[in-house]
Image 1: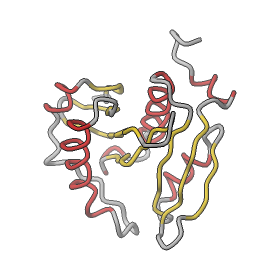
Image 2: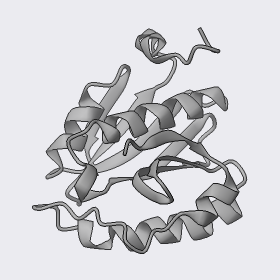
Image 3: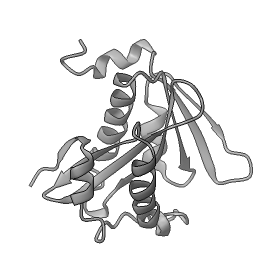
Image 4: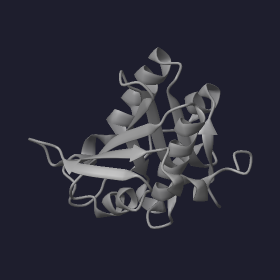
Length: 166
């Protein structure tokens, strides 16, 4: 079955089955807590921030991949604190698709910048981020992370425009 990709309503998010979400990554020491971060982010941030949103690729009621975007105190900037792909769905382009859809939705909601952090050992996510239009990156001081800032006004984003935006 193919996973359906899109921005989810609050009701759809509440119906997601996250208990079996398995997205640990070999070589990434922070990955064991990803499920707890997803549950916390969905449970707390979505309830406390009306501007937050979830993009997911869903197979039935189980997410194959999920991205959570929340506002920041920085004007016109949104943060993608969680982007995770289930182990069974890796290598199918879902991480890239979720990242791009999160960026497009943030842009559609008026943001000009999307920020995120990636563990330095997650080569696939580093590759996805490095290939985005308008991206800048730098090591996070004192952590194993790489900070990414994506300029959503970069002309390169036109290639991803949704039909209604073209």
